[in-house]
Each structure stands twice: as C-alpha cells, then as structure tokens.
Length: 167
Image (cartoon, rainbow, N blue to C red):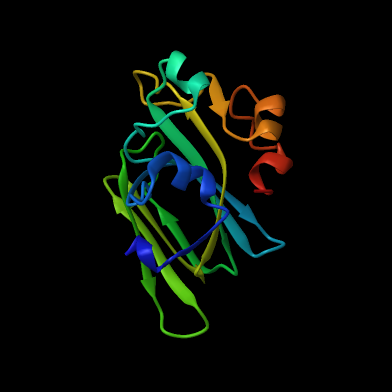
C-alpha cells in the first residue's frame, strides 16, 4: 500500500488533493538514477485532477498533475519493458519489516519497475499541464513553487541536474 510510505514535503500535493492520495496510480515519465545517494527520482503524473486549483491553473485549461518522487538508499533496482509514454499503473509499497525499508513496484502494461528503498520519499516539483493527444507531456507546465515557476516553463532536458536531482 502507498500508505506505507512516509511522504516528505508533500504539503503541495496534500493542499491540492486533501486526504485522498493521488499516488495510488501514476504514469511514469522519467527515471533519474543518482549515484551519490544511491537515490532514484521518478517523475510521475498522478491520478485524478484536483477540484481545488490555484487560480492560474483554473484559467489555463490544464488536466494533469505531475510531481517528482525521490527515493533514498535504493538497492536491488530492476526496470524492464518501459516504452514511454506508458499507461498509468499502480504504485505499490510493501514494508520489509526492518530498518524502515520498503519494496517499491510499478507494474502494468509494458512496465515493470522494482527496487527497495527507505520508506521516506521526498515529493517536489509539483506542476500541472495539458496532456497531448499522443500522451506526452512536452507542452507548457505551470509549477506550484515560486522558484520552479521562475526557472521552468516546460520540463527541462535530462541534463538539468538541479531539476532532476534536487527536490
């Protein structure tokens, strides 16, 4: 269950969705492996679109919320069958019983991602956008955080380390 994760800095998502977790089903957009951690940052579209929106989002006709999930102390990583843009899939976290470790699984049509990590997961770079007819997310993004809003209008290329490695 996703409830087995300790979400850190998740107030942006919680302000949008309230007590309902939008992380039960996600669409995986990117995977960033950080050797210094070892850590993994997943960029995901979350399920559903919130009823309560920032004013800027209301007028922009957006339909999808996206965020980064940074997992720390990652081990036993496996990824296969991923051909983006993949359809939404379940995000599952299973407690391993010691040292606050969990097994993370994203399994669905054309995607099998598994790894173990610490149960604390950092949430950041929350944005909204209009999904393209082909399922891509390359258009304009409106970010919640002021710094992100000033720096980015779209999702930056993978070489932008400050975006993908810092939450």
